[in-house]
Image (cartoon, one colour):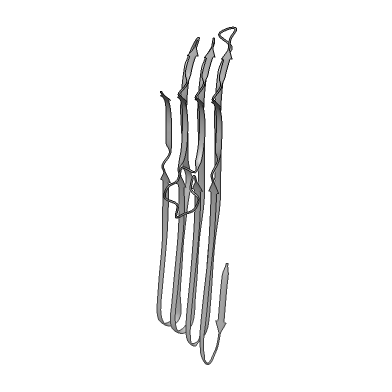
Length: 231
């Protein structure tokens, strides 16, 4: 919150206020459940399973806000106020300018191995992400007398998700007595994305007032979800 007040009865007065708020949250997890270059056996009955289960849950809750207030009074008066708020939430990205993504990964796999089970062979990768954001900006500029007042406010909310969620067998001889299951699941949601920009400009007397407010919301989900057998 920023405020500026400039009173003057017989001369001119100028009051300016500016404020900004920025919130950046980044999550890049690496969760793996795997067998590599091994021989594994689970024998003795249908209840003896081979199970690999990689799970990841991430949650971001963000609040960013900025309010600027300016007031001036005099024979000649001018007031200006600006407020800017940026809320940026990233899962799988290193920065807001990162366009490649996939920095968040959940992997379950058996590679270059032999796996034998009298029960099931289960390879699971499960991924859940949620983001909720509120970003607000406000500005108030009031001039008392003959003059001008200007107010501007901008609020932005950006939520981006990009994850690799893979479950697979690769270069592996797998034998299951019951079921062979390879499952990859992903649930990514932006549950809340609220942005509010409010600008108020007023002249109490003679003159002009201009106010501009803008808000912007960007939500982007680009996950790679794969379950497969290779070679």
